[in-house]
Figure 1 (cartoon, one colour):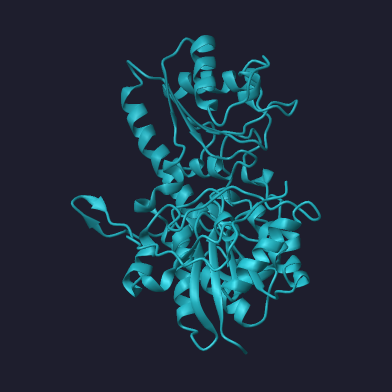
Figure 2 (cartoon, one colour):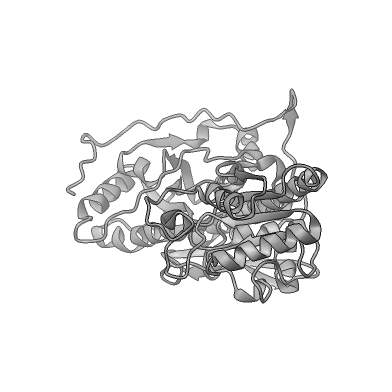
Length: 422
């Protein structure tokens, strides 16, 4: 078979381990020089491919590529951009075809979540119809843990480890001050549509009925009266209460709490910001001192506390993606299948992108207690292996060391710049 080049790109919100998948792709491609020529990366995801803004990873040393294993963020830049469907998006796919042909790209690896899976599917199915056969594989990544057909999503284990650790430590602080100061701590985590991350915070406290930690997830409707009663009860019983809340927690009518302002009052929706709403609600109703925190980017970039399991799996899916493409597969995603909890065993297998793209895996109701406030034993068995093990980055001067890439641009070959028709 003719030697062709690879194009790798990152998409969507980044994670602490997305670059471990990049490492898996690049190192595996380099080990297959008889089939693969150069390994390019698109700067800022699919937008880099459209604008012929490519990076030549051959300029990076083996040690630099290996350092991606302990580097957070998106080493090659990411984007949030969906390719328009045909026929409106024809100009986009004609442009991608021209770029792929100009740079002899026969393998495309798109590292992202559910929406990115659709982009990989479009490339796999549309570019061949336009005259350029390409093996297109989606490489899974998301801290949301909502990729269907996969037991877990690379990036989630590290985020879960970080939020559970953060809550665990914050609760020791809260307990020590509750007698004369703060009674409630509210920690907001990501999770616009699913409560996987918020649920992982439940690992911060041993299982037990009526514990001082409450979990609020989008899968269970928020009931103000019931919530206030639960917090009041825990303050009376324990002296304090901690709350983990997903940013997308909803009322029964389907609106997010951020849309309703906490009391059913119509308002302007914001990205995140549910923690201060909860805090204000508690201050007003219970007359207690409340502290709140929004973890935001830190929960997805905390590579210093990454899960060893997560790093291993993130690398494994990148490696598998290249192996699948070389075996002739396209339009698939390497997903993680769990074989057992104790001992934890897993393997990688291909899943069709059509069954994954633009769909979400919800947090099972069986993972939460009947009242919805805490984790069940089943949930703890699921989450436990995903946060297990430490994969410390190297440190220098007291701070973690990250990969320093040259990001050498590939000379453009097309005369015209991309112009979208829409």
